[in-house]
Length: 475
Image (cartoon, rainbow, N blue to C red; front, side, top):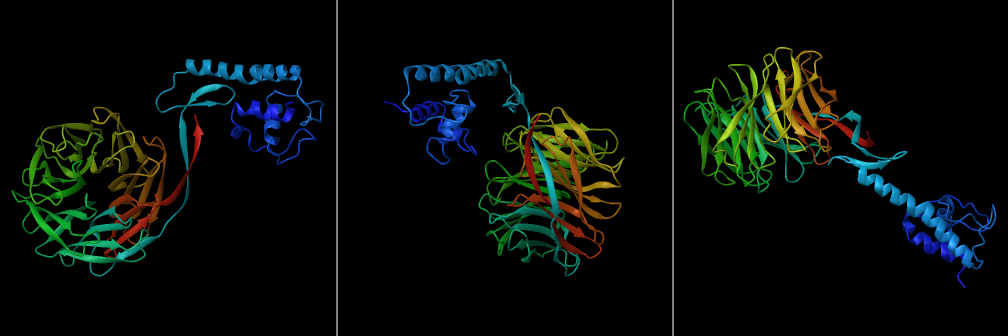
């Protein structure tokens, strides 16, 4: 004959025994803790399937009568099955969006999951190179080994240099001189190629050319410098990204014609390629920044100096044979030092400086081609937002490094959510005149890494943002 304990275990098995684990104690004196049926009996009691043979006993070894069989089944149906079916009916009536989840807090409803950040203190600020006047036009990327690498200009020797960190926190590393012929290394921008080797775009000020240094290995002990474009005075404000095909693309300013241009490499090491003139109306292409859109097409933010506007060029295809220039923000003198990245939703976000109000601002696009969007003012205390650089953090939220020109400090703005409705501004480096030519990347540990120039000391410096932890709440 079946015993009571066996029947309860069988009933609870219908809903999964895993759901019953973790009861601290039993409601019955004759059901000891730690037995294979203890949690099942307690679950059945709490869900009204059984009431026990008395107020304090369950009698697990007693045989089960036909009447008890029927009672267990009826209570299971009424207290477990029917509420679940009612809940399913309720769920069918809900119309949640793709980003919402269904929760039950005193009733089923659609809810928006929200990550609430909390911050620990920011990390160290390190002086990496101190010999001569170095660290101008910095650009940082995270190497294939997880270690930061920073391209920069050596103003003393007029050379292009690259600092290669030996570990993720860059406690040690090696500074390499890459190109010495002429006055080279202006407006550097570094990316990691499809082969894991660094690639650095820069301006040759002697010849007025756009150039590209292609490292032969991940630590760049050797490499080749290539002259890409020579027509006119070109290669100002270079920005590099790796296209969907693995080939580099470089946005830059043609200073002769004051046009926005894009050099599209034909292969990963850029032995050949094509220079395209994208936008010619007015004096455009200043402070360009390029990213690869969710569709694989380049997107370039830039400043229209004629109208003092923030603009965005959206390519129609990966090699940008055609595209559309969008004017994003026109209120005041805006769009200085823009930096573009692609948000977790596939829509571009652009950090920039409002020169009228001396504020840090962020333009958040509503769609991948940015036909509409919202401009947000992030930080207003002092003269802030100069030399902006933008990355998407580990939690999917924008992070912007910038300079506070009032105190000559390096600052970091960390958004609380992907559209940056709120956020927190941190001061990272205050010694001397810091925060010039900032560039931000996200380290392998999720902590922001910011290269910058201390012009008082003439040093290349590297700062680390705060550690951020998130808890999930529902709204």
